Image (cartoon, rainbow, N blue to C red):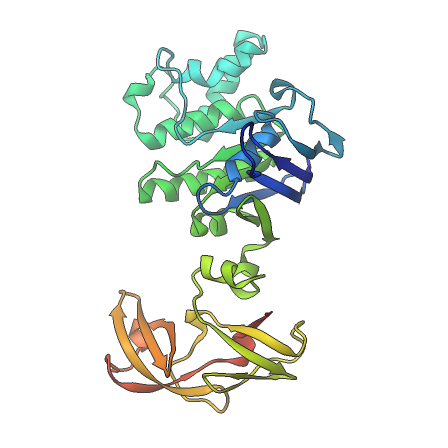
Length: 347
């Protein structure tokens, strides 16, 4: 298995004054599955291509198992990249597409046939070898592209928006397939996505990228419960943010006095208080309970979403529909912010 180290890498395209990727540092462990997540144009794919050797590095170093590979040609890196638009050869059938890389490596034909059959069974395309790409669905084409990448047994697998062109039910199937393949081959894998849910479901760790810079690199749970900034919190769907002044385990806010858990690694002074919508309870408790007006109530099937307001502060909360009380828009109700669910960021 192969580790990947990105050490202060940067990419400035010719004719551009602004770096597409800047001072990027990252450690990916052997056999790890990591997501590059961020909005369009943030530098995710550029970084992926620098790992593959398809883009040169303007500054910094790319290392595999501690060995610098900046000057190693793409075909010598033992890295394969799967694109969202498949890039299958239309004049080859499925088996020929999958075996192409092996033929280029002068692998004997019996061995090619054996490995192609093996990988097609793995991606659930057994019996599809004689079909042309034109006879395949989008999901099947993506499986062929994945099989073609894996059949050469790469040390590193790179996936660029692998699920972007698939319908919802096909995305679920491909997620399961990617996870099962990763478990079987234990290949170090990096995939690019702009979809938070996709990153959370697939990745061991997420590298969140804004404006060409790595802003947080951690397990998915941390992005929900311990975001490093307000922007990160909002990107992960948490708009429940209010400024305050921290003193000990108390934070003075426009909402009122809030008690927080001791031990939060934030010094006294100006802070931002964050709590996720699903963490707010529609009930009155002994601490952090506030009377708020329900501005909007939306039934979402298994859960109900509320927009609530106190003074100028407007927040969102959700609750399971079966347990939701009979409040409607315009009603006032008590809402509680559990101290153990509150996260603070230094302002």
